[in-house]
Length: 247
Image (cartoon, rainbow, N blue to C red; front, side, top):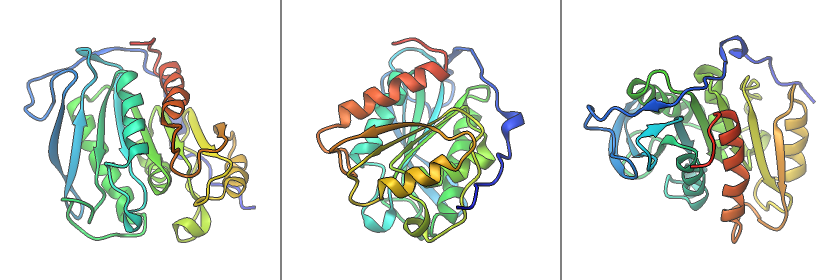
């Protein structure tokens, strides 16, 4: 197996042990515990985005969550994406879900993970403008997990969460993205009927170092009946690496 390329932004990554006060001067930011639908300018047009704020008036960082494959019904309303966003909010993160180009009210057309990576980076750049010093978490499910790993090469996040990440034939046999250079959690169910668990595990083990891996049993691809357990797997990882205790 070809080893993934070396991490491009390892020297830029550092943990930031700080808590930031949210500024509400911008009309785009929701009040604590609220969400706001808005549009972010992307490279192929406007991107439909849902921005949610944690209940407290301070934040531990920011999070961008990427949804599954647009050509198979993937959208930011996906229940696994929602569960990821909920975990991020519980960890105190200002959290953005968005629709890739051509999905929902987002403009543009599907671009085989290339343009979608640019979409993720556009939303990330916009969110960083709102809180420039905040640590960034990238997260994604299935196709969105692959996109967020690709985006990490340019975004240099403080942490990465990959749920049922596909490689190879699932994403057009594209080259392996580099290591994100940050704490990385990969969650997958052994009985996934869409993305083969063993194939993905073999790829992940080739990364140096490999991500922290959590194996589910009986959850399939969509974690039916195990979304609470999924959140319980993700939340401690976020709290640990953002140096924030339970809210």
